[in-house]
Length: 143
Image (cartoon, rainbow, N blue to C red; front, top):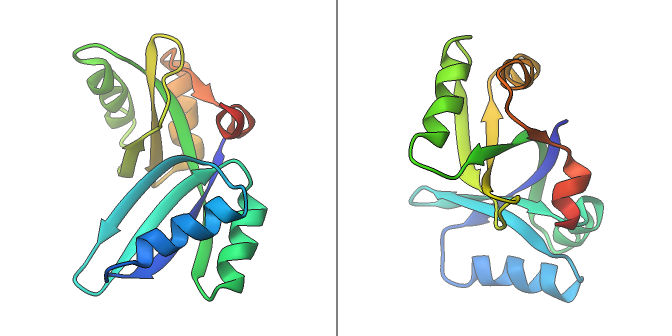
């Protein structure tokens, strides 16, 4: 039930983000979710895409440093307190959220949030035990 995310390390300067998105677009790769974190010198662009292998290959061919990470996609009730319910369930099992970001599309009446946990399998179990829906990667890549 994990989702494969790619992370691209990019210089924090004008045009680098546009270059990554241009390369992916020209290769026919659709970005499904993204997060950009930066420092003064570089950024980390985290992406969920429809074709991870192809994205990895075309970006590496263009000289970018790319890595893969397993993350978890969870349906979050799209109402006040919905995210809090999930975070409280995780906190009750002492699971740390390293980072999270929103998915581009909704899943029915719910939002979808991408999570990176310190203990992924334990987090998935806690979420399922508390009745939350964890989405399979194949479902996200084609949404």
